[in-house]
Image 1 (cartoon, one colour):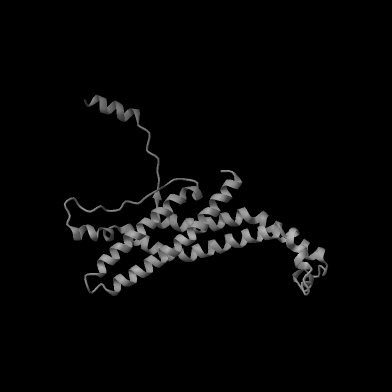
Image 2 (cartoon, rainbow, N blue to C red):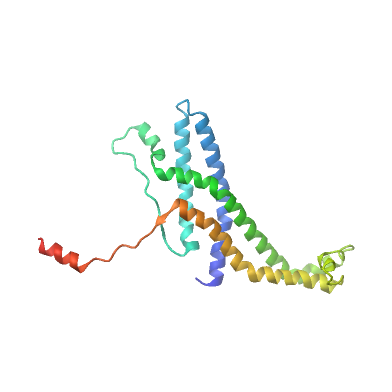
Amino acid sequence: MRPLQRLATDTRYVLIGFPAAVVMFATVVTGVAAGLGSAVAFVGLPILAATAALARNLADIERVMLPGVLGHPVARPQYAAAPEGAGALRRLLNPLTSGQAAADLLYGIIAFPFAIASFVLVTVWWAGAIAGLTFPIYGWRIAAIPGSEVSLPGWLGLGHSDLAFVGFYTVAGVLFALTLPAVVRIAALLKASVAQVMLTRAAYPAPAPSPYAEAAWSASR
C-alpha cells in the first residue's frame, strides 16, 4: 500500500472508529446495566439479548474495517444459530448462547479508552501539521497582534521578531507533518490490535488439494 493511501486508510479507520466506539460503549453499558438491573424479572434477559445482538452488529462493522489497517484478512468468529424448530423465546435469547457474545460486549468497554487515545493522537497531529504548514499565510497577522511577542519562541530565546514567531510555528508544523504517517499508523494499530484479539479469528487460506489424497480417493472407488 502506498504511503498516502496508508495514511488515508489509517486516518479513516481512527476517525470513523471513534464515534462507533462511543455508540458501542454507550450501548453496552446501558444495555448490560438495564439487563442486569432487571434480571430478577423476565424482562432483563431480552434486554441483555438485544444488547448482545447490537454489539455483534457493531463488531461486524469493526471487522469490515480491520483488513485495511492490518494488511491481511480476518475471519468472523462462529456464532451459534438457534436450533431448527426452536420457539420464539429460544430465538429471542439466542444471541446470549454464543461465547463470542461476551467478547463483543467486553470489547465495547475495553476498546473505548483506546479509541479515545487514538482519536486524540490523530486529530492533534493532523491539526498541528495543517496549522503549522499554513502558518506563513496567516501567522503574520497573529504576530501583529499586541502582546503576541510574549510567546513560546521568545521564552526559548529565539527572539521576539515576527520572523522568529512565524518561523518557529512553521517548523513545528513541518515536524508534525513528517511524523504524521508514523503517529497515525501507531494510533490505528493501537485500536486495531485490541479488535483483532477480541473480535476475530485468523483467516487461514484453504489448503491446496493433495494429489495423494485424490489418488487414494480414486483407488477406493
